[in-house]
Image (cartoon, rainbow, N blue to C red; front, side, top):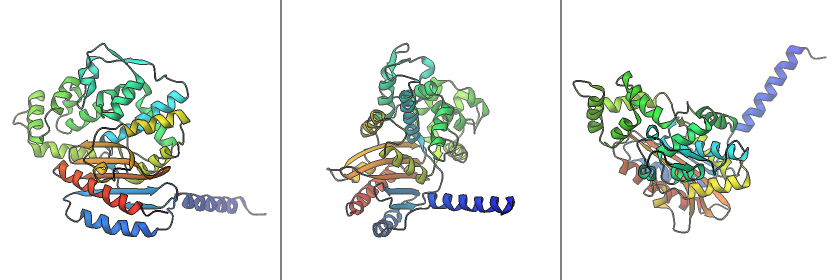
Length: 348
């Protein structure tokens, strides 16, 4: 008989082998070699950094470029919120017809159609999903996060085996950023957060923040830039592009959702009206694509399900960082759209 210690060692070895097999990527396919050369060329004059993960869901072939770097997702985290809302709907913990009341404390920066809604009005969860995914409305996102629970959004990702940093509401996220300059920023009111968000230039926003918190001399744009970088280092609402790619692959295969909820998730991502100058700008007219963007100070993301052929999804998860102009990041993402669609069109 084998001793118990020997059995334990053999069992651990077997489990480690299985885990390694499960997490390993398929051998490199010829198309990924072509893609890598084109990506290297595209990024050669980009004054920033790129993380990219491409997956042919049918074959399992992948391409990764800095894909394991944890990256702040900004509004791309709303995919996780959508999945938890639909998961709870499938389990009858909520109804998409249920209405949530919009109150003054629900005001956020990055409001779109909800910016036209008067406090006290009630909107269905289905409508809020549309606003969140179609317009990337932050107020809609936080209403939904409060309804399903931010801990449950994180738990949904954990259950799917998706590694992320801490998940936060968008209001708490903003407070955490500004509190890098002054802890009293944790007390900023939603209306004040919205007012700050109306100032795109870091120097202008830093000046308004100084006025709100009574700080003299006023903070500079450089001070605010450092605050954002300190926040990004905490990995809040962050994930690698490999992790996001795997999440999108699960969605492409309808894993963890009913057929109806999966169809709704795909339709919501197809309805996204933001980021049209990004990956979508480089796609051929016949392509079908469903995506979600994310934009914040020196960060821009676009994560997609791309269909160049019917019923053959290609996952594209891309985030850029440490650039100075959003238009430069968008130009790179559009170029990636052209490169990926041209390369992936050769898939058999």
